Image (cartoon, rainbow, N blue to C red; front, side, top):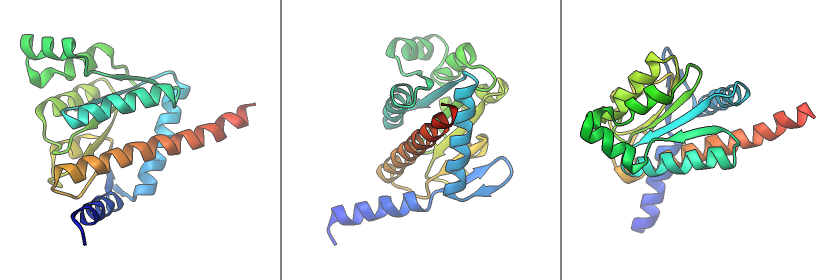
Length: 196
């Protein structure tokens, strides 16, 4: 088997074996996606905003999915990766507060925070999760690496990729994110057709 075939197999296995949990129980992937789509429909119908955060490659995913959620999903969405804002908060407050500060400024009860972190232990991601929960926002996490990572313990709905390789975790996160949005788009069309 070639390196490429082996790598694709690792990503496929990791994405297929994603573990989903809530505050109180475990769900299978289909149940997790169903809940995420239901939360998204409720967010849309109530005029709330979905906020995306991440570091490094996860920041790129956060920006990408925020754009897709707005353009394709017709959702209110935001991503706090603007360089002036990030560096100002990092320099003047602390990097740990880089996402928590804008969450406190823009987050509202009923909004959703999508926190993407391969390790699930980045201090600025954890601070943002805590800030969102303090505001009665819903928190959805995507993490990997250690099964007891802090982000996975902090979300209302948590998607954990059981893999140790950053590339495999990040690739799986992108699959999960696109799967959510595509399922939402399919169901949103069906929901909207019933309104006509």
